[in-house]
Length: 247
Image 1 (tube, rainbow, N blue to C red):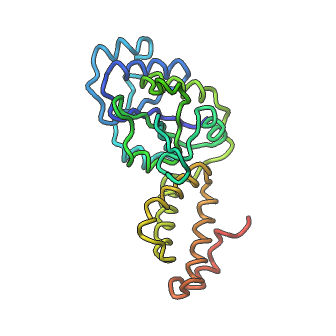
Image 2 (spheres, one colour):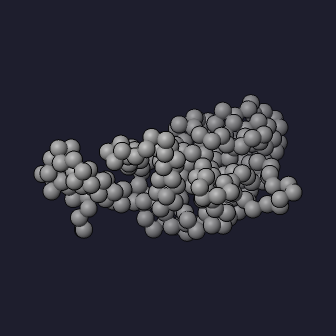
Image 3 (tube, rainbow, N blue to C red):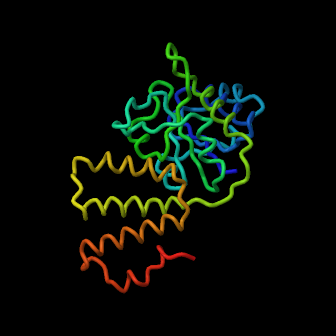
């Protein structure tokens, strides 16, 4: 199965951190990551119950660390976009649909859970590859933090062994950077840039690219750039570039 990190972003209440460790262990997960957490003391230990090992091993790091090392970052949110024209929190998947998206891949998947009072901010959501929301009743849609973690862990428990490896975070960073530069090449309107890059991240984020697929996209972009401006790249480099060739 993929290596799954449960990431709590700035949790406010130590009891919720303890309960999260407990429910993670219930479903076989052990890697808890904390970003800017509240102080953890006896309440967290009490709520963790027999998951003291998960709580004790919890890693504290930055949000930048998480994005840098993860093949896929999934943002959980109770607020979703109402239209595909608003790309920030769209498209979104239920936990069960999420399982189908990640069950056959090999890599590090980080699932972000936001602050108890207002969740993840727009920047954290924007940088994520996929969006997950838990269907709830309209009259009271917001779940307790540890309950939300429990629902996700339940759906992702006992995933099968992966069948292929994902492109690395470095690979994906390069392809996003290349596409961003390509928008300059084709004079993409500046006021559309941010939204376009969010859409690109959503598309490629749920595509689960392999390193070979990412390399092929680089090759296609380079070839297109050469046809737009032959001086931008030596033709011999294109001819020697095997990223778009078949094995």
